[in-house]
Length: 353
Image (cartoon, rainbow, N blue to C red; front, side, top):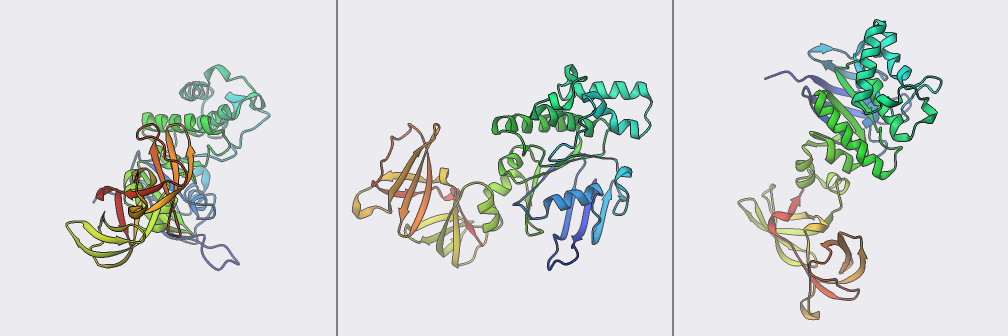
């Protein structure tokens, strides 16, 4: 079996005076050139994990290896990693080029090489024309590019990104997200990206590590995480979701016949293969909504929100509010108070443990 490029083996971090570890028994293999996102809510341990990889925090237990070499107790400056902080940590008294050159100068790189590598790094992030500008004269997006160039100019073995987009407005965040992914693919650099934003993780990652309370909930490709969440926490955290109480009557060939509360007999994809009480997951945009007569309606439209490309409905089914997203203009618009039936394709619903 080939050895992974970056390996975290049974990593634990417990701070003095705390009842539970911030990171608990974290094991992960990252391949060379892979883009990995650590995704989870605030306090789940993702930034602590990143800082242990960087060497800014020492693990309580476990091992960190890079390209087959133990790094667990290696000082930050000897790890050969590039780190971009959430607040960028730029030097306001230096201009753009001087900020980018700082790491090279600390490594005593010859001046001619420093000048060349700084110019190359600034061109990579499209800031070559601003090399002499002061940091306070830059926009947020430009400062983020400077921080990225400073991390890349030292030619790190691993690029570590700690929520670098969180201080940007929504449109610029999307632009920079795409640029980071493009640069990462162009350089083929192994990258670990910390975010609490599911869209960022889905759009950039080769694989996503979903974390909760210091533990790994699931590791997989964006498609695996979104289409086949391992449990209700992952299902709720990744995208919008409806969760229905149901009972499996029988299952065969990966399809379960289920009695769904408020909807009756339905079918859903089933990897568990056992009868009993379960939860059925259906994304709002996978639900079909049709006007119905009072006698055969599943529920009633409670609210209608037009958001441009789609119409978002809230449908009252018994005591449950069900979210439905429909393409605007495709089937007309249903109004509040309309009795409706809900349905789905078998492959669009998933039985969860």
